[in-house]
Image 1 (tube, helix red, strand yellow):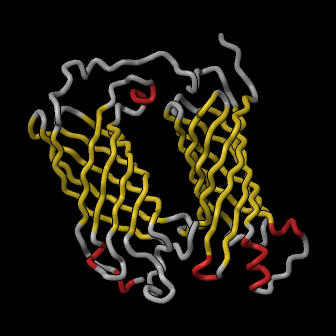
Image 2 (tube, rainbow, N blue to C red):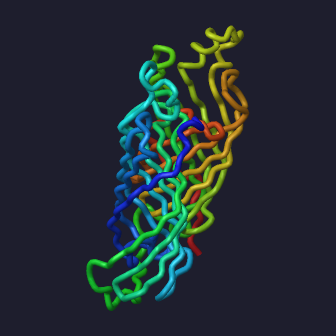
Length: 331
């Protein structure tokens, strides 16, 4: 892939809105800016890489903020479209991307300086990542680190009451200081299109659980387990002449340390795990990132992404159920 390395410009336009404490998570996270951005780049004007486009919602979390200066961290997750991708005949060296539509992940550390009541200048270091999560291979992903310069203009005058931050009552999906350990159980299904390389497609089925104890209003931590069945494993075992003595060797079972970061109905899940079973597992461990959204009482939708080191394994979509294991009695 080094033949494609180059320097090139990228352009972004975004529309953001300040939060002021309408929900408790806004005050807990320092009143972040939420918005949506469009990102575009020529990727070095290469006829093989094409052009890249991305649209992603983002949350800009303040680390340090006063009337003149801001230090923020931005996280964005959305969809990207690349005009070129791998082709076994016309673009066979382009192993980074196997599909036109991809997930787009944006991370940025940003400094802002207010030069006028409605005008800010900003600079930052960012990375833009495109990947389809191995739903279609090859899929090594594209990473574009960048040094950013920006100008931001407030469309309306600042709210005179902005400093009167609101702190609402607790909401339905929030930790109330009484409920304790929860067991989250979920199942997800994924899909791998390896037709370009092997002429086959495979399904991935997973079942997992996390036992989580709240650390604060924002976060919980605990342990987790995973049980996954990747239909590509028996295919590659046969292709590579690997002997499978028991069917159980084709099931990937893992144990993990789990951490949850919660913002009202939306949660980020982080799991660092080790395999305890699975002869075809590509490494001894894996990392799993997930999004959970509470849809009704104890039911949540989930989107999970599993990777081995820097290489994506699969993306799973599913449903889960939150089971309270113990409730502290109020004093």
